[in-house]
Image (tube, rainbow, N blue to C red; front, side):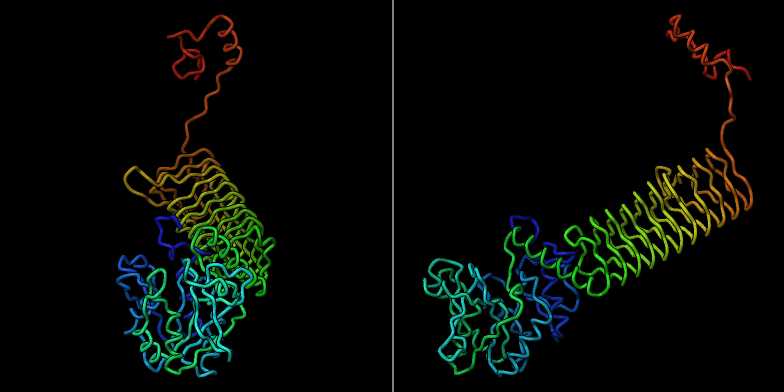
Length: 464
């Protein structure tokens, strides 16, 4: 991968790569999930608590990796072995593998697929009776013969075993190959030598066999995973106008009749209700959107947008923001860690931070809550039914009572009682004839150093 990030932690549609086969196993009904990792513990902190972790002390091959998990393998259990870098495996594929394995009463069942280009994959060599004789690895020159390289049936890396025979066979595996590794497929001829049956199960979804070893494969498989996510939502009643121009993570929830417009991205644990419209050009990250809401040309992170709320265009909703039912965050509005009451509006060109706003309040254009004094954050409280005029600045901590007003251009530093008008601005002074005097001054070479501006407060020409 040529990356400081461990391969299995590279994200695919909002999940680390390793989380995909784990999710498939969990959905398929696995009684226990065991992950084998290296002594460096690259997955530490990324796995759920119900996943057991064992360490393969030295990377001596896939058979040795399974042997590292021997303490978790019951003799009478059905054991499924998966690759952590095969993210497109599904619960349906795993359930079908288990059913085939149980039905045929085999000691081992290998999941296979037919690929047009099997390069890099182990080839499945069949016995005359159709059972599996062995799997030939092709990782290094000399592992397989020229004839074996022409076989198109490949091992997907997924196996079903009976626990007891698997544990016994693992003890007999030897590293007799070009790479000096103990390959898990080498248990298959060992089981046959002990007169145990080994069969193949061709899976219906060849994509489950695709692994990731570089960024190119990561992009290719991510596009397949994304297509599946889109299809799932569309079959559930969601309109995705242009799937090729839309990004939706795996764990996103979307209600029926919602429309996702082009160039929109929905990430993490975001949820969207019914009949809402998202986009175009909107990003939602771990946000919650209710029913009948509209979010256009906006960026929303860890915010809650209620039913019938309108957001955008060009709004930025930061973590901790709550827009309650019927409220609005309009054009070029930034809101952070604030609760905007039902029916209240912040229509345009405003910053609201660390603020409580009651219901049915209107915030005029250019309103700012000055919430930071250089050392601490302070909160502003604005009641219900308040009319905030344009260009009002609230210097927190400050409180505005219900049904109060502010005068345009005010800097509010003290509480405003309910029903009162808060106005805080300098008196206006008009200087008559200013333009003519200014013109005459420029023509005569005015504005020399030390000469007062006729419009300044210090000029003797100002009339009071």
